[in-house]
Length: 252
Image (cartoon, rainbow, N blue to C red; front, side, top):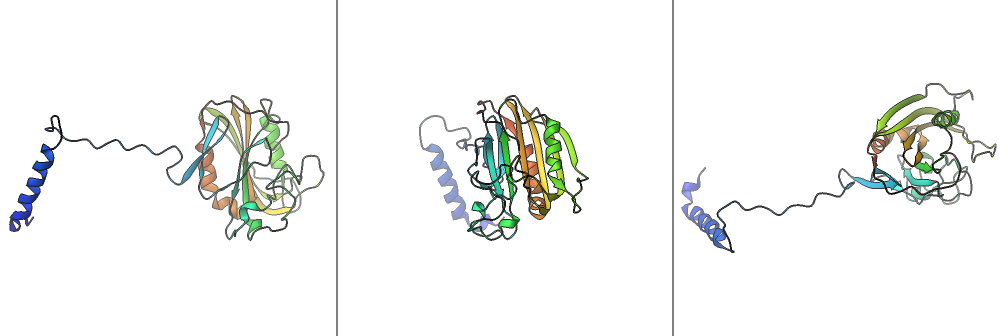
């Protein structure tokens, strides 16, 4: 320290401190306390946004594009941009919509007029709720999702990874599978997609109000780009009772 070479600065600083301690009313002999800083709102940290599906709350990355759900059964709907997705990508059709053509944003068997650059590289994430009765048993949905894929020869897929765990006190059954996506364009239509090199991250969440179905699917490269975020999204789930909104029958 070289303060002894500048005594005027030291004296001036001491005088300023003494003057500040004498200002105001009451006993100023103790240390002063800074006002409390409001804590960040939930979802405001680490570049995430809080979203909810009735009683279920999640933290979604800010680079996911929130879309207006295309039907009442969809509680949350996101577009996951692929590498090179250009302007307008958020409005492009979702080639993996289980509800088929004519059901609103993200529907249809292929890119429509005005599809943005990189549309074929986007993935989608949707959380469905079909009422307390749900859309069949847990196993029925796991089998359905696995059956929406085939290998390059058109045979049933192998290598599906199924995991059961508990998140926020709720049982969660999760499946991960890759291959050629051959799901029906709409339930019972008999028409199928044929999209190679796709990947799915899906889960059945058994909540007090019934089963919720999380389904994220898209090109393998895009899904792997968002993989850590997908896992973090599911693991961020919290339950806050607000009451579920019933919706019609169907399946994801």
